[in-house]
Image 1: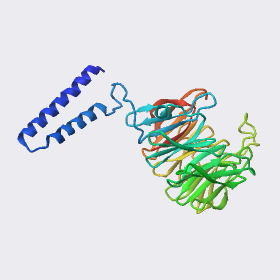
Image 2: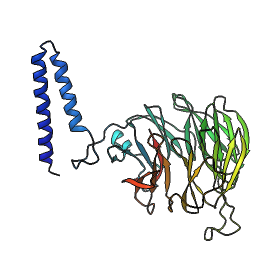
Image 3: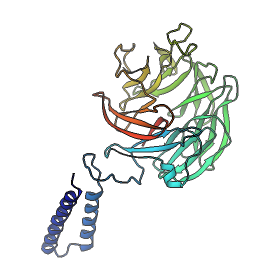
Image 4: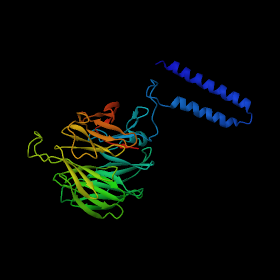
Length: 382
C-alpha cells in the first residue's frame, strides 16, 4: 500500500470536513467556533489514530493498556519475565509493559496476575506480590511469603495467595492487605494450595499436595477466612470454573508414576468432577495428565486437554465426547470472557520467546497469531 496515497486520501477527507463546517458556520453565525474547531481536531485525530487490521500503515504504538488480552510470560532464572498486551480489534500487540513503564524489568519468574477493577493490576512472583496501576507503574509490593502460586482478590483491600507445600507441611494460603502492602496472616495449615475460585462470598481452593498427593478442595468464607469444609474430588485437583447454573467443575490431573508410558496401569487417571451445592454429583473419567480447564463466555461449554488433545464439553453432558474439539494441546489456554475468543500459547522449547494464537470457538479456526515474551504460561483479560 502507498503510504503517500493513503495520507493524501485522509487530508482530502479532512478538507471536505473543513469546507462543510465553514458553510455551516456561514449559515449559523451563532455556532460556537471553538467547539466546532475542537470537534474537527478530535475527528481528524480519530481518522489518523484509529487502528484497522486491514491497514498496511505503520503499526500504531500502544501506550494505554485497557481492554484486551494480557499474556503472562513467566520467564526463568536466565530469561526475563514480562507481560504482553494484545488488542484484538487492531490485531496489535506490545511486550514488556512493566519494563516500559518503570524502566526496570521484572526480576524473577512471573507466576500469575489479575486485575483489581480498571485501576490496578497484581503481579505475583513466588516470593512477592507487586501492585501496579493500570499503566503498570509500580505502587508497592508485598513480601513475607514464599512459593506463591496463584492470586485472587476479594475487594480493593484484600487478596489471597496460594502456596506450594507438601501435604502435611506449611500453610497453603496467604491473606494480604492491598492498601498497606502487608501480609495479614497465613491460613490453611498442612496443605498445598493451587488454584483459587471466588464464588460470591466463598473462596474455593484446590489442594494439589505439592510433591505428594492430595485429593480435596477446601471452601472458605472469604470474609472471615474460616475454612468451612473439604470436598473429596480426585487426585491432584487443579483448575476450577463455575457454570451458568452455579455449579462448580473441577479438573483433577491424576498421578503419573511412569512418565515414559502414560498408559501404564500404575498411573492414576484424572477426572472431571461436577459439584452442586458443595456435593459431588458427577465424575467423568479422563486420561492422566489432563489440564487447562476453561469455560466459554456463556458458561455453557468447558474446554480442557485430555490425551494430548483439546476437548469441548457442554455442561449438560454426562460423558466426554469421543471427538476432540481440535487434535492439539497447548502450553496454556484460556477464553476471553468478553469476546469469547480462545487464546492458546506455545512456549516452544521453553528457552525464549513464545507465540499466542487466537481461535474462533464456533469455527475452530485460528483468527490471529502474535509473538510474545519468554515462556508464555498464562492469560488475564480486562
